[in-house]
Image (cartoon, rainbow, N blue to C red; front, side, top):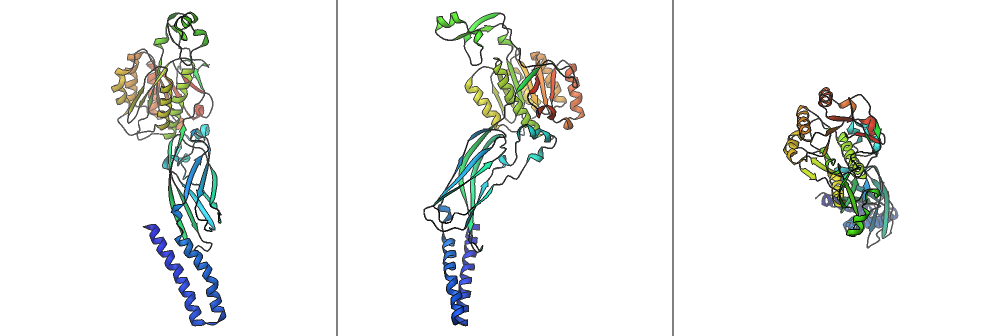
Length: 422
C-alpha cells in the first residue's frame, strides 16, 4: 500500500510539472518558452521511465565470507545485484535489515569491562552503503559485519533505494534473502585450582585436572578421543584387532556433570549469562582434554540433558545447544533442579554454573551435596552487582563444605580463567 501511494504521488507530480511547462509554453509562446519545454522533455521521459522501472525484478544475492564464526569475530559480506535491462541509475542505497539478535556487539574479553552495565553493548546496528551503478547490469558491494554476538542469526532482507538526481522520484524495495549466520560461544583457556577456602582468599592453580588414579588398572575398553598414548593395552589391541585402552580404578567415579542455570529472573544480567555460557563450553573442552568424561544438564524453559560419556556427535550437539541458549522465563532454577535430582548419578562430580543465588538455591545445593558428596558452585556476576544476600549465601555454602568459586569481571577480562573443581 505504501509503495502504491508513493508511485501515485510521484506520477502525479511528474505529470503536473509536464503540464505546467506545456501550459506555460502554450500561453507565453515564443522561442524561450518552447525551448524550456523541449529541454525538459528528455528529463520528463527519464523520470517517467524510472517511475515505471521494475526494481523488484532485480536478482539480489548475499554472500558471507564465513557462515560459522566464534563470538566476537568479524566477517565480510558481499551483496550482488543482477538486472536484465541496464536502465541508467544515478545512485543506489543498500541497507541490511538486521534481526534483533544482531543489535548488540561482542568485543570478546573486553565486553566484561561493562559487566555492571550490560546495556552499553546494545547498539542499533546499521549498514548503509551507496553505489553509483550507471548502466551496469551487474554490480556489487562489500562490507564488514563486526563483533558478531553469540547465537544463530537469521538475516532475512536487504532494502534497496534509488531515485533521480533531483529527488523527484524515489523508489524502494525490500528483497527477501534468507541467510543464516552461526556464532559459536568463544572457548576460553581454563586453569583449574585447588579448593577455595573463603570468598576473599586465593587458590593454588594447576594446569591439570587430576581426577583419575592411573596407578591401578581395573579393565579395558575401546580407545576414545583424548585417551593418552601410554594407556593403550598393546596385548589386547593385538588380540582384538582394535585399539584398546586401560580403564583405571577411579575412572568410573570421577566423571563431571556441569549444570547450567539459564532461568530468567527479575535481576538477570545478560552479560553475566554470556560469561556463564563461555565458561561452560570452555570447561567441557578442558575437562575432555584431560581425558575425563563430562556431561551437561541445561535448565531453563526446557531441561536438556547430555549424558556423561565421550561421544563426538554429542560434543557437537552440546556446542550447538550452547550457541542457541538464551535466558528464558520459567519456574525457578532450584525448583527445576530438585525435580531432576533423582536423575543425577551419585558418583559424579557436580559443578553448578549460575548467575543468581537465593535462599532456595542454598537449600537445593545442600540437598544435592548430601546426595553426591562432591558439589561445587561457579557463581558468575559483576562484583558491583553481588547482593548482600548472595554474599551471605556464599559464606554459608563454604561453611557447609560446598566448594564455591566467584568469577567477576576481574577474572573474565583475563586469560586463562581460574576455576575451582574440588
